[in-house]
Image (tube, rainbow, N blue to C red; front, top):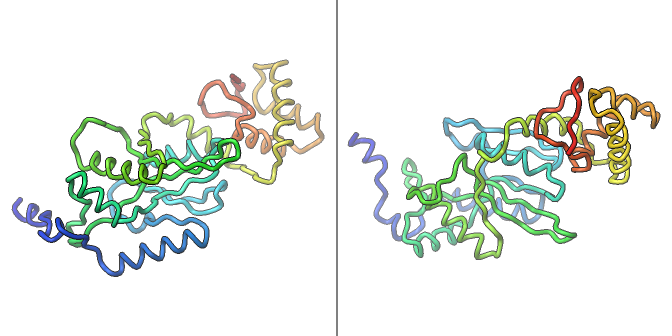
Length: 274
């Protein structure tokens, strides 16, 4: 027990100034330069954090890049948000300038996140930074992701949330913590099914026309299995069955075919529309 307490003892100077290795300073500066000049990449990647929790590394067809998520909670929230029609992009593991987070911690009179094993301060990051299209204007939202959020609890997690919120508030960017509990697992399965054949080359006009035709066919026979309706549409417009299925999935992802309940779609079952 004494050894454990000794390992977690903070160096006295860590309370007075930022302790960060040269390599970490260099890595942060390079990351800042890289994302300013080129496409986004996360500051932390799945192989860099040695935790016992599950991590997710996968190719996102909408963003056309590899995404690194550090928990099941982040995965659920990311999947739920990325396919919303107004979401342009999501930057995960977005590093916060340690000079600013250090200053905020001093003002709030709390300890800055610290790596006890290496005796250096930890560069903080926000789980998801979302860019939205609001009537042609691009706006940003910062979202720390937790499995559950206890706003009144006194903990290191809540202290970190306070620092993050102050950091983004200084930039006039709303910072809203999100609980993964609010995201239904069936909804994620539903989105995975739809995004399997995501095709950005399909025009909004094609998707709108298809969704209108789908609504008419469904209204005539709402109890028909999904595959039967798609077969009808494929015959009507003279395309292959697979093409009809692909356009259906993309139109639904775009919010043009509103589903009544977040249940996994199945070709052999009817579709419930709102």
